Image 1 (cartoon, rainbow, N blue to C red):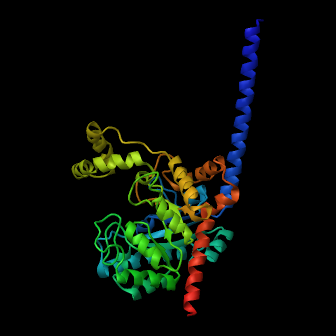
Image 2: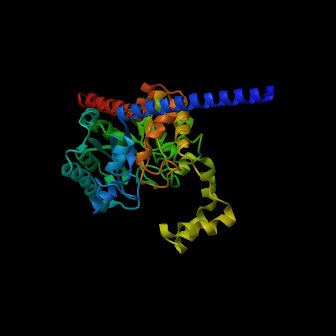
Length: 398
């Protein structure tokens, strides 16, 4: 046997040993991550499955479409969610109020119909109790100030029904606040918009600044005595979508005790895709009118690609990149999860809720401590809820 063969055998042996040790280490990390994930309290502050509750669709059955149902929540270790009470900002007036009440009623009915599986919660302590009992904590967030119909008494009614955050705008301006998806009309918040923020503080309902214009954010931050929530926003430094938050906004949100809940929608995660969609959107709208429906998605892309090139693909790992950036800017106590599941296109590898444990494993591999991961998964949100309620309690004493 020549020396070169001996060396080759030794190198192969060393490589095999190294690979075996790496695999064992990776398996150990994966097992540790799984144990951590399923022992943690995992809370998502924005999921758009609510309209399905108003149909024959069954929350307690596993489905092959959409992103969220009870079996897949259990498989993904998601312990609680804020059901989004949503309708387009173009639905206004009494209809917006009546439609919102019907969606709220659907969440109440879900908890009534399945008391062994779902608990309607309005406080952090109720969320903890639901987790101890092995139940899903069902909370509600109202996605758009247009649904209060310019009425503080209506806002108070929503709070009594269990709504625990109000997104000040959706994608169009309200009569009292500017949206990030519309042309500025009010230069942020009007006088009534500031009254809405003050009323939310009194009610112990979180002021949500996802979807608002930058000026509305700064106005709300200045007016609110309680910390704010960004229920489903990512970081503009990583992807330039105007729905995302700048570093200055994230720092200011954190300085007041607030939390940015990272959104998983693919354009919010990846700047290449965001820029591609900005260029292609007019053509895509034209093609959507020509070839409507999900069944024609491939046909639309076949006609779009020759002009704009292939659409960039986005990996779920971008979610962790946004978490990393937000933690560096805001600190570990001010970052959470607000997926926007069922609200739009998700990245590859995070199409639905059963894939959530990947995030915990990725954070562990990136060097996050277990206690810090628990904060991101849900504890930061509970802390925020408690602080907002504390402000309401103090205001009630005055």
